[in-house]
Image (tube, rainbow, N blue to C red):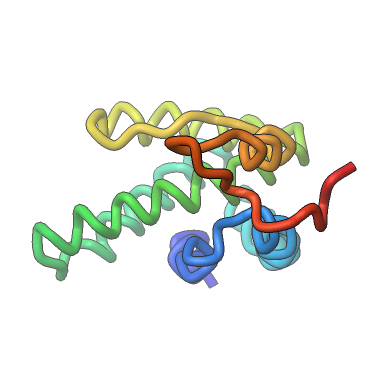
Length: 143
């Protein structure tokens, strides 16, 4: 499996992006990504980043403009909510990959940027309110 395929395969997790499901989905994704990302990084970080971007471009080559816009938004969400937080936590070459990917993606898609953040910051974000409505469903993961 290629890294691009793994990012696309994680898109269904986005439909369950809430305080109750995110930690479990993040853990599942983390388990899936270790062998794929490790293999992708063998030729080097820059090559892995370019392969991911090229794979995304290839995937989108047969889509309509509307589908590309939708897919790029979802792809970016997986990068921001699953792949990058995992890489930042793992550190070393993985962290360098996340930072390089973020820089390359944001330059290539300036209207569709994402920001690096870690798992704990995302989880804490569920305590914030969106338009006055709590995003948290329960206290399942409260400390």
